[in-house]
Image (cartoon, rainbow, N blue to C red):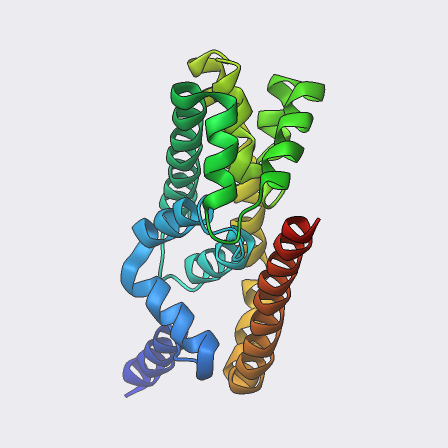
Length: 227
């Protein structure tokens, strides 16, 4: 009986540590991330390259928390997130190299929620900092989606471009996944008690930010056409 009594608490702790279910939107997102796994983290980072309103910083800490919770592998999540960023960067680099500056700029202007101003800012950033812009640009939302274009237009060495992209993305992804992992002990008890309330707050914030982004882009395009 004594041996059995010692085993029961261990089993209960393992069940709690193995992945408690959380309520609301947060619970759904974590469950979805656990289901699609580390590959899904990489796909989310890849999609961010073409759908800028939702930054990868909203996904990577969740991957880190799931790694702390024993429901995802930290290193695979990091590796595939970095691979997703690299593949997206290669795509824009190739577009810039193949079709040139003017046609690429027009293409960016036709993509929903993107603007030629985004292209112009990335081009100016690259013109000022050169290869270092590729490295540091991976840490800036929107800029990281476009910094590959001028690199391709200017025919920056492909291996050099790849090295800068992997280094910048790897460090940035490691920071955000690491934060989710490091704060796991503090996050878990909060989610266990307040995940429902926090989910409502997160939904409000996300909807407000997306609406602000979309409305700001639409108004800017209308002003430009009117002028």
